[in-house]
Length: 270
Image 1 (cartoon, helix red, strand yellow):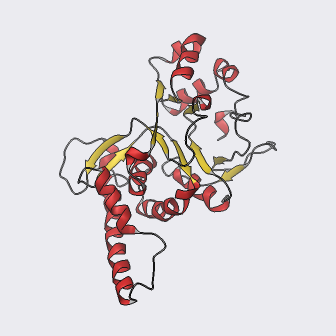
Image 2 (spheres, one colour):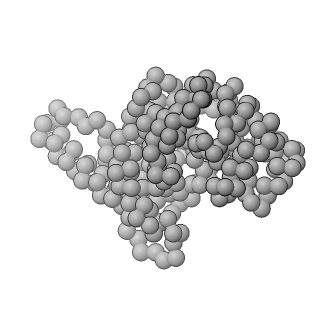
Image 3 (cartoon, one colour):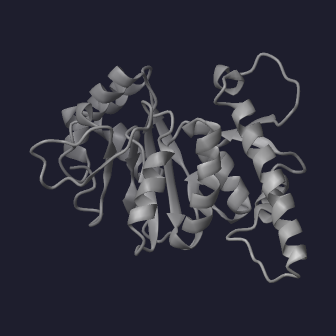
């Protein structure tokens, strides 16, 4: 299994339980074919609370964890190549198809509208009780962080790399905010980086560098071990950015299996 020798506590997320895999702890979550992959993280955080933090790794990610040993476990780690997308309620044209979909900008606007309403009623209730009532989390602070990270704009964000480390100190806030992203139907690649910008100022986060393997350069990585070794020494993650069939072929390639810490779980199973 991938990372068997690196991480003692591992949970795999899939839509169905695996048979005859006694070493594998599988969390069964319906992510709608990966559209809401962050449901895996939220479900694990709800049931596994006594940990320093949570490292979320998608199937397309090879983690060069040996380059991250000295990282601060009290800070969020995220993809350094996060893309700033459209601002809310801004009229734009020729957008990426997922921005224009029901799971894109409009879904994020639903989150914003709910948080504005929630913040209003929380402030009103606090005043009526003369400060004796305190909300579970501060929606106003989340909105302020979002605005600050967007340099005065409420922006959407996107990443194609499913990798995130979240310290336990952020777990309650993540759970409180993520449920609104899920309820509004925000797609995974948009939800995670946008959600993080409601939780903390982005300059406080550790940025993970990456090398991308795609259909154009995959032969270099699969046939030349030196190319793969160099990438593993210079960056934090290797990202397999291909269509699902091609991605599984690359991940299951024997050369990559031998290179990484242990035996890969066959990716056709999860």
